[in-house]
Length: 195
Length: 195
Image (cartoon, rainbow over all chains, first blue to last red; front, side, top):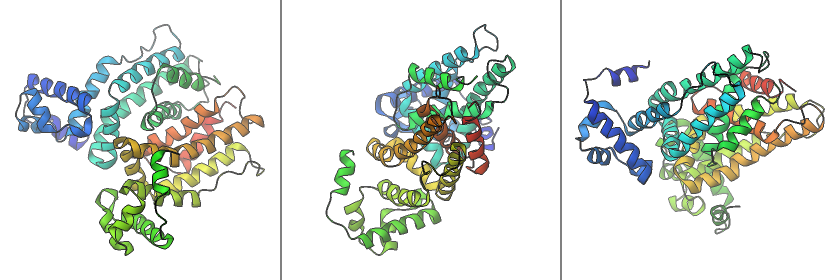
């Protein structure tokens, strides 16, 4: 855990109800107005809390959005079960369809968070640790299980393939393309094309 | 060509010497100070031209940087020759090594331009047309030639593989990782792993 994350989570005890209201307000306002047009002041007003209450918990708008958007992401996106009887290709496709649905619903804040991570190194580190790395590990682990079961060649590089998968949809998303079920199918087909 | 690009390139005739000085000043200042800290005014002062001279040609700092950084990119990054005797894997690796060297030299402005493309849809379209799409086509064409020569399976999806390649290094770069020759080798090895 980075120093910055510790600082944030080890602060004074917060009111969970207020925190929930702030996160809900942030997600709602960003969906309505777009990330760039929403201020911490507007979020606090919508949530019915003092602005300082927001700053006590989140050092910036980007940190608040990260928690609000990606908490929802992990609630809605079920991690593939190691052994659910379906093959690795079907598991990966189902996982990507869920991820894409969530990203599509939050396209504007997600693209804004990735932009913020380029301009603020400290936020970039939090974004990477809390959001990027866990998802990358989920896909790498899924591909390693596929290798163990012989569904993917043992000579393939599971970590690089995971970067191909995530990279492909980041690249499409950051260039304004749609993330849909057809893209999920095409990515999975190409990963498993050569076995 | 988008309407915005046309507007920019069909404006009044400009002084090529002044334009060159402005682009050189932009690249130098951004390397010294970082993208966020460089203003159009500072670039104009460094180049010894009026601020309006800059605005006559480039609607924003992002547009100016795009032209300055990526003009250099295309000068320095040779496109793979269709038939130079080496295999497609070696060609792709050599191309990526050149691209990575240029991106590494311009990491801060490139990450800032990708961020700007997320926040300004019109700039995003110019960025995509001028920078992203041509490079993607270079790699797709290289992979299609590899398929025609039997160096890559005919059943592989060259366009998706090109997205895997670009996606992998965008993803690494945007998450603050180094782009080096080892990454180029690992990407190429995985693309051609299964033939």
